[in-house]
Length: 227
Image (cartoon, rainbow, N blue to C red; front, side, top):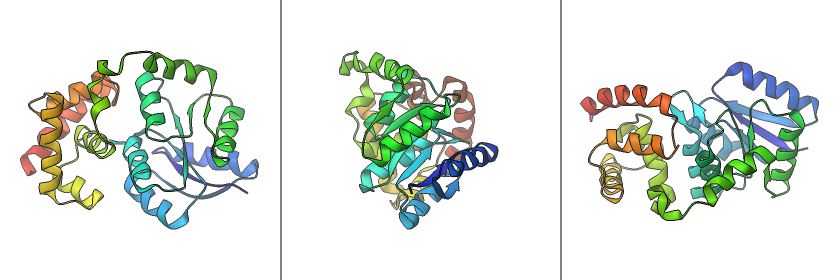
Protein backbone atom coordinates (compact mmCIF):
# COMPACT_ATOMS: atom_id res chain seq x y z
CA UNK A 1 0.00 0.00 0.00
CA UNK A 2 1.53 3.32 -1.10
CA UNK A 3 1.74 5.90 1.69
CA UNK A 4 0.89 9.46 0.64
CA UNK A 5 1.20 12.94 2.12
CA UNK A 6 -0.88 15.94 0.95
CA UNK A 7 0.33 19.56 0.75
CA UNK A 8 -2.39 22.03 -0.27
CA UNK A 9 -3.62 25.24 1.36
CA UNK A 10 -7.30 24.46 0.75
CA UNK A 11 -8.77 22.14 3.37
CA UNK A 12 -11.67 21.11 1.13
CA UNK A 13 -9.18 20.07 -1.55
CA UNK A 14 -7.24 17.97 0.95
CA UNK A 15 -10.43 16.35 2.24
CA UNK A 16 -11.56 15.54 -1.29
CA UNK A 17 -8.18 14.09 -2.19
CA UNK A 18 -8.07 12.01 0.97
CA UNK A 19 -11.50 10.52 0.22
CA UNK A 20 -10.58 9.75 -3.39
CA UNK A 21 -7.20 8.24 -2.59
CA UNK A 22 -8.27 6.16 0.39
CA UNK A 23 -11.13 4.76 -1.69
CA UNK A 24 -8.48 3.67 -4.22
CA UNK A 25 -6.54 1.81 -1.54
CA UNK A 26 -3.81 4.36 -0.72
CA UNK A 27 -2.86 5.32 2.83
CA UNK A 28 -2.85 9.09 3.43
CA UNK A 29 -0.51 9.44 6.40
CA UNK A 30 -0.60 13.23 6.82
CA UNK A 31 -1.37 16.62 5.33
CA UNK A 32 -0.39 20.27 5.66
CA UNK A 33 -0.92 23.72 4.15
CA UNK A 34 2.61 24.91 4.99
CA UNK A 35 5.94 23.85 3.38
CA UNK A 36 7.92 24.09 6.64
CA UNK A 37 5.46 21.97 8.58
CA UNK A 38 5.23 19.56 5.67
CA UNK A 39 9.01 19.07 5.58
CA UNK A 40 9.08 18.18 9.27
CA UNK A 41 6.28 15.66 8.72
CA UNK A 42 8.01 14.15 5.69
CA UNK A 43 11.22 13.67 7.66
CA UNK A 44 9.25 11.93 10.41
CA UNK A 45 6.67 9.94 8.43
CA UNK A 46 8.71 9.09 5.29
CA UNK A 47 5.76 8.56 2.90
CA UNK A 48 6.53 7.17 -0.55
CA UNK A 49 4.80 10.02 -2.41
CA UNK A 50 3.82 13.61 -1.61
CA UNK A 51 1.15 15.46 -3.58
CA UNK A 52 2.18 19.12 -3.71
CA UNK A 53 0.39 22.28 -4.77
CA UNK A 54 2.65 25.11 -5.94
CA UNK A 55 0.62 28.04 -4.59
CA UNK A 56 0.40 27.85 -0.80
CA UNK A 57 -1.07 31.06 0.64
CA UNK A 58 1.97 33.31 0.23
CA UNK A 59 4.45 30.42 0.11
CA UNK A 60 5.63 28.35 -2.83
CA UNK A 61 5.63 24.60 -3.29
CA UNK A 62 8.97 25.06 -5.05
CA UNK A 63 10.49 25.75 -1.62
CA UNK A 64 9.60 22.24 -0.50
CA UNK A 65 10.70 20.68 -3.79
CA UNK A 66 14.09 22.36 -3.50
CA UNK A 67 14.51 21.17 0.09
CA UNK A 68 13.57 17.59 -0.80
CA UNK A 69 16.16 17.67 -3.58
CA UNK A 70 18.83 19.22 -1.35
CA UNK A 71 18.31 16.64 1.38
CA UNK A 72 18.13 13.71 -1.09
CA UNK A 73 14.98 12.41 0.59
CA UNK A 74 13.52 9.22 -0.89
CA UNK A 75 9.98 10.65 -0.96
CA UNK A 76 8.78 11.19 -4.54
CA UNK A 77 6.78 14.27 -5.42
CA UNK A 78 3.79 14.69 -7.72
CA UNK A 79 2.84 18.32 -8.30
CA UNK A 80 -0.95 18.81 -8.32
CA UNK A 81 -1.74 22.40 -9.20
CA UNK A 82 -3.83 24.85 -11.21
CA UNK A 83 -0.69 26.36 -12.77
CA UNK A 84 -0.39 25.60 -16.46
CA UNK A 85 2.68 27.82 -16.94
CA UNK A 86 5.34 26.11 -19.09
CA UNK A 87 8.25 27.38 -16.99
CA UNK A 88 6.65 26.17 -13.77
CA UNK A 89 6.26 22.69 -15.24
CA UNK A 90 9.91 22.70 -16.33
CA UNK A 91 11.10 24.10 -12.99
CA UNK A 92 9.20 21.46 -11.04
CA UNK A 93 10.72 18.66 -13.11
CA UNK A 94 14.18 20.22 -12.83
CA UNK A 95 13.79 20.21 -9.04
CA UNK A 96 13.06 16.50 -9.08
CA UNK A 97 9.27 16.19 -9.30
CA UNK A 98 8.19 12.77 -10.53
CA UNK A 99 4.95 14.03 -12.00
CA UNK A 100 2.92 17.12 -12.78
CA UNK A 101 -0.88 16.98 -12.90
CA UNK A 102 -3.27 19.87 -13.43
CA UNK A 103 -6.19 20.22 -11.06
CA UNK A 104 -9.26 19.45 -13.10
CA UNK A 105 -7.60 16.51 -14.83
CA UNK A 106 -9.24 13.12 -14.68
CA UNK A 107 -8.71 11.17 -11.48
CA UNK A 108 -7.10 8.43 -13.55
CA UNK A 109 -4.33 10.84 -14.55
CA UNK A 110 -3.52 11.56 -10.91
CA UNK A 111 -3.56 7.85 -10.05
CA UNK A 112 -1.23 7.11 -12.97
CA UNK A 113 1.17 9.84 -11.74
CA UNK A 114 1.15 8.49 -8.17
CA UNK A 115 1.76 4.92 -9.28
CA UNK A 116 4.57 5.99 -11.61
CA UNK A 117 6.21 8.02 -8.83
CA UNK A 118 5.98 5.10 -6.40
CA UNK A 119 7.87 2.98 -8.96
CA UNK A 120 10.53 5.65 -9.41
CA UNK A 121 9.19 6.69 -12.81
CA UNK A 122 8.10 10.03 -14.28
CA UNK A 123 4.61 10.89 -15.45
CA UNK A 124 3.36 13.86 -17.45
CA UNK A 125 -0.03 13.98 -19.09
CA UNK A 126 -0.10 14.92 -22.78
CA UNK A 127 -1.14 18.53 -22.04
CA UNK A 128 1.55 19.01 -19.39
CA UNK A 129 4.23 17.41 -21.56
CA UNK A 130 3.48 19.94 -24.29
CA UNK A 131 3.86 22.77 -21.76
CA UNK A 132 7.25 21.51 -20.59
CA UNK A 133 8.44 21.04 -24.16
CA UNK A 134 7.83 24.73 -24.87
CA UNK A 135 10.54 25.63 -22.37
CA UNK A 136 13.02 22.85 -23.19
CA UNK A 137 12.93 23.90 -26.85
CA UNK A 138 14.17 27.39 -25.92
CA UNK A 139 17.91 28.21 -25.59
CA UNK A 140 19.07 27.93 -21.97
CA UNK A 141 20.70 31.37 -22.09
CA UNK A 142 17.24 32.92 -22.53
CA UNK A 143 16.59 32.18 -18.86
CA UNK A 144 18.99 33.85 -16.39
CA UNK A 145 17.55 31.74 -13.57
CA UNK A 146 19.01 28.60 -15.14
CA UNK A 147 22.45 29.57 -13.77
CA UNK A 148 21.29 29.47 -10.13
CA UNK A 149 22.12 26.64 -7.75
CA UNK A 150 19.26 24.72 -6.06
CA UNK A 151 19.87 26.63 -2.80
CA UNK A 152 19.89 29.96 -4.63
CA UNK A 153 16.62 29.08 -6.38
CA UNK A 154 15.10 28.11 -3.05
CA UNK A 155 16.10 31.42 -1.48
CA UNK A 156 14.94 33.56 -4.39
CA UNK A 157 11.52 31.91 -4.16
CA UNK A 158 11.31 32.69 -0.46
CA UNK A 159 12.50 36.28 -0.97
CA UNK A 160 10.00 37.06 -3.72
CA UNK A 161 7.23 35.49 -1.65
CA UNK A 162 7.84 38.07 1.05
CA UNK A 163 9.98 36.17 3.57
CA UNK A 164 12.45 38.26 5.58
CA UNK A 165 16.08 37.20 6.01
CA UNK A 166 15.32 36.22 9.60
CA UNK A 167 12.36 34.06 8.54
CA UNK A 168 14.33 32.39 5.76
CA UNK A 169 17.25 31.76 8.09
CA UNK A 170 15.00 30.18 10.71
CA UNK A 171 13.34 27.89 8.17
CA UNK A 172 16.58 26.85 6.44
CA UNK A 173 18.74 26.77 9.59
CA UNK A 174 20.98 29.56 8.28
CA UNK A 175 22.03 32.78 9.96
CA UNK A 176 20.32 35.98 8.71
CA UNK A 177 23.77 37.19 7.65
CA UNK A 178 24.24 34.11 5.45
CA UNK A 179 20.81 34.66 3.91
CA UNK A 180 21.65 38.31 3.26
CA UNK A 181 24.87 37.18 1.53
CA UNK A 182 22.90 34.78 -0.66
CA UNK A 183 20.46 37.55 -1.52
CA UNK A 184 23.20 39.99 -2.46
CA UNK A 185 24.89 37.33 -4.59
CA UNK A 186 21.60 36.56 -6.31
CA UNK A 187 21.00 40.20 -7.16
CA UNK A 188 24.52 40.57 -8.56
CA UNK A 189 24.23 37.38 -10.61
CA UNK A 190 20.82 38.38 -11.99
CA UNK A 191 21.83 42.04 -12.41
CA UNK A 192 19.00 43.51 -10.36
CA UNK A 193 19.37 46.19 -7.69
CA UNK A 194 16.47 45.50 -5.34
CA UNK A 195 13.81 43.00 -4.30
CA UNK A 196 11.27 44.61 -6.63
CA UNK A 197 13.60 43.70 -9.49
CA UNK A 198 13.80 40.12 -8.25
CA UNK A 199 10.00 39.95 -8.10
CA UNK A 200 9.64 41.28 -11.65
CA UNK A 201 12.19 38.71 -12.85
CA UNK A 202 10.35 35.91 -11.04
CA UNK A 203 7.09 37.00 -12.67
CA UNK A 204 8.70 37.26 -16.10
CA UNK A 205 10.10 33.74 -15.89
CA UNK A 206 6.95 32.32 -14.26
CA UNK A 207 8.35 31.42 -10.85
CA UNK A 208 5.38 33.30 -9.40
CA UNK A 209 2.12 34.38 -11.00
CA UNK A 210 1.84 37.92 -12.32
CA UNK A 211 -1.32 38.50 -10.31
CA UNK A 212 0.69 37.92 -7.12
CA UNK A 213 3.21 40.66 -7.90
CA UNK A 214 1.37 43.54 -6.20
CA UNK A 215 0.68 41.55 -3.05
CA UNK A 216 4.28 40.38 -2.85
CA UNK A 217 5.68 43.89 -3.20
CA UNK A 218 3.30 45.23 -0.53
CA UNK A 219 4.42 42.42 1.77
CA UNK A 220 8.06 43.15 1.02
CA UNK A 221 7.67 46.81 2.04
CA UNK A 222 6.47 45.61 5.44
CA UNK A 223 9.27 43.09 5.93
CA UNK A 224 11.92 45.52 4.66
CA UNK A 225 11.11 47.75 7.62
CA UNK A 226 11.85 44.87 9.99
CA UNK A 227 15.13 43.73 8.39
